[in-house]
Length: 177
Image 1 (cartoon, one colour):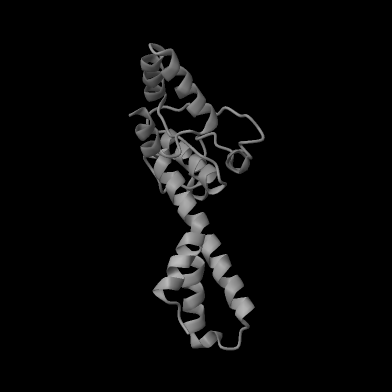
Image 2: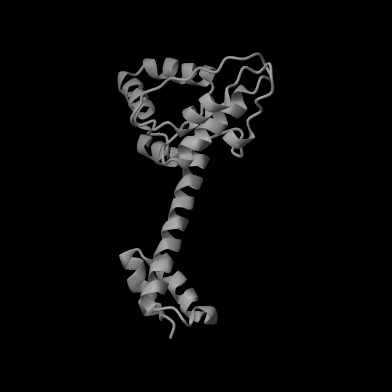
């Protein structure tokens, strides 16, 4: 069968092009000949939703500005002497940040793994659907100090920090102009 260009224009307007393309691929695959059209359509819808979720996570990770975007809770080093509890770190990573307000302070000598741990926790938050902005304390202090001179800019920065407004840095820069 296959869809026409006119069909794809309709799908674009409806914002379901990924579903339509995947559905077309599934229909063309002879190994799916025994499946009902409804099964193929639901598979296409599930695949499109999974792709959207993966894209959303990818955008959140990119927007967060992690210096180590490949950091993972599973790869945290729990050797003796680091005073890291895997259960506590797992709980922090799994926390529903929207429901429980928590502050986390990472203190360690240079080379202690603070950046990696912060990135790993931030990555877990991104994977759980949260918006994250990675900043070193000196960067945050500098931004707050600069914004303090302008009441509106200061309030906007505080509001963005509280509400996750840093998800799309390009959008923020466009709003300023």
